[in-house]
Image (cartoon, rainbow, N blue to C red; front, side, top):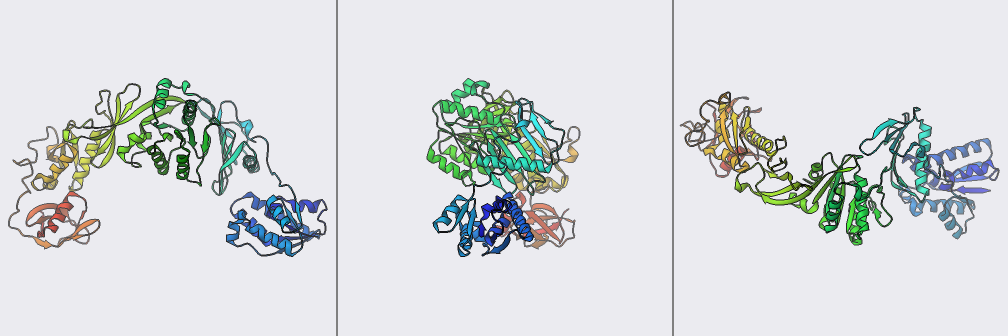
Length: 630
């Protein structure tokens, strides 16, 4: 009797089973090389089916050594392309060819393979597939109590769980006996197989070393080596199901959601109850005649059957969004908006007119909104998100209303500094809490006090202004720079005496440019003037700018040089030693003072104020000279 087992029969151990019961006694078992190749590929991918199949081949080899059966490996080994197309039947076709050529019986647990073989006139023995490790209930069910939110299991460690009420969770040991690798392997295999074969579960994600399972209301992550350093099972479930009536501001929030389609971010720390609140919002919208869908990866919101839950189509949420636009929901709940791609999808759907509710991890309510900064255009944020809800310990802690207005930001006074400002206001009182706007080419978030003015805070406009002044002055000064703010629109900058002319610039142009951009009047002084009453004078001449460097400089001509402009620097070769200080002039007019670096060069970073002056001089064909600093 000649028998050709296919991959399914080998994995299920059906050949050795029949050898043991005497059915295949003295039979010739012809194992196709295509089966060996497929099992090897599965084992290399970390799949248990591959290892189970290889164990079966070893058992068959032992039977052959004992003389119970004859064992041969026959046929062609499937190439890489054929194995990658195994689900299309390429490997099965090679196996059928072996059975047909050897006039053998094909043994299979694959119903499709069996039916195709019968259609081709091949003798077939079909056996039911083995449901290995499958149980009716979750094998770790006993670890869960009424107040258990999650169970954490890992090889060689004591089982632990998070137990308690929302906001008062405790991470506790639930068994003093460390879990063995055999037990962990049994649990992990049973959980995955249960999800595959139960109508109450499905595999959300399956990759090398990681399976994400959804079984009923449990979300279970099963990690294995080499992805993890040991077998680990983490099972999470919601411990509360709420309605919008269970939260503060319920009436106001219902009215706000029902008024028109909104862009909402639900924020909070992990375990705070964000998804529970999102589920309550989804149920409310559905009950009020809105078509509601969800976008989740993985899908674990506990919503009613009328709300369809969508995963990542083809692994990409952009594909899900494209499909949802054809379904035309009124509202979409986007669970776990984390990466830039998620924010872009959220924004695109919101701008397409869909009401969006996104769940975002954040430690403060304002942080949720700031995560949009840099990912979308600043002026579009209020059109994308008009409401921020912050959840803490299962309760609505803060609600923000997000609007935009053209105004002079709090903390600035000059009317010509008016710009679009995003106002973040407390939903309950209407009082502005934050302003977000562009300040000197960077986006700043400024907390406000109760009167709507700038708060005494390290994140206020004063700190930003101080940083900007320091950055501008340090780009041209060689010595130490100190900045002191005096009110909202005045500052004093202390520099070394040799830097006064460089900082103020030709005719006061450089300091005036900084003043105009920041809306702050800047007084430049030397460090000697700082102690006590700051000494006399302000380091400026009668015209309000330095008179020590500003005009034509003597008769000294200096050495004519030809600066070279690179992608990042303006480079000047000078005839001076490393560390010497020189002045750079254009047609005899002072530009700046510099220190000679290694290689006898002076390098000025492009984009700085002094580099712009130097490049302007080069463009105008002015004679650039270098003289020793006096």
